[in-house]
Image (cartoon, rainbow, N blue to C red; front, side, top):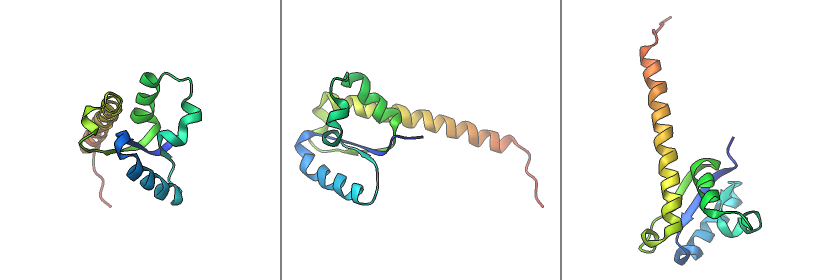
Length: 109
């Protein structure tokens, strides 16, 4: 279903901390998207197309490591928008499922 359990979104200035988090997640068997770990797979790809696919669909969750450096990065804006778009779509789908549940007859036994 998902290629990654989680995608890590962070500014390069915060890499040392995020790498420790990635190592911990990996140690627990969590499949995380971390750019340095995926360099070979990203080589030659159009990142402006590929990153939204990862952050907007291939990862079940996205963790944003927001810092003073985060807001000023163009790539992170792309990642954040893809993650938020996915969240809004999932929320809409959950709302529709909940409405169908409310409209269905309840049977008590």
